[in-house]
Image: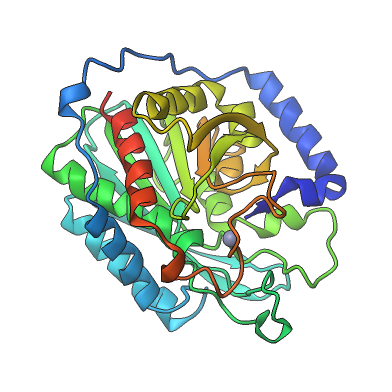
Length: 333
Ligand SMILES: [Zn+2]
């Protein structure tokens, strides 16, 4: 994932197209509902369980495309989701990386309450970045990263939500989609040009263009990315606000009611290229990104973003729990 700010000149034609396309199809629904009605029945996440799910993924090693760790972790995620009662579909595909390398991708889609017509999409990317290209040490820039926060954190929250839903099913149908090949975009050391944005989020692009369930749609979607950092800051990211402002306000108001208004901040930030961009634009499901992003910081992202420091040491179980609890409160309202 990266910041559109850095690609502004190269992506301007794309952004114009997106703006026109979205203007043509109108705005998204999703009215604020009475949040007190389901107050006593909303389940919560377990912090130890969340931590375990991050550690378990990181233990495979970097889940970089075409690696053994990637293959083994996919099997783990598939089995775990199935063990929580989901109907799991695997979408295998091939995609070209920025340097034309052929990558074997695997999107994992787990459906709960498949008989329900009203559906909610929850997603995260499960691959990890093959380069520590933001590391200050020049000798490690081509080393794959653990992606404990950038990748594993969002997946961990979704695994925990799956576990909780099995014990206490929500009324709505829920589809958890773990996208592959999000983080193999062009490294910082290369020259950048128009069209580079399509080298990110390859799994989400494939999924949105080839829905594994024909005609699939959902009332709304929530993407989780980099949701495990200490000192989190989830601001109102511009791509989300453009496509799904009502959903974003609903979730942020929910977080504020739960006492997390200092973390889910009522503040606009720049636009990001992340999986939600393609889910919104190609699959046309209004989807927000809960992502640590603070454009007052140098890169906007957490300090260890795309470095070898994105490891277990820098993941906070309490942040994971806050995010999981806010998503659960939204699902169960
Ligand atoms: Zn990343």
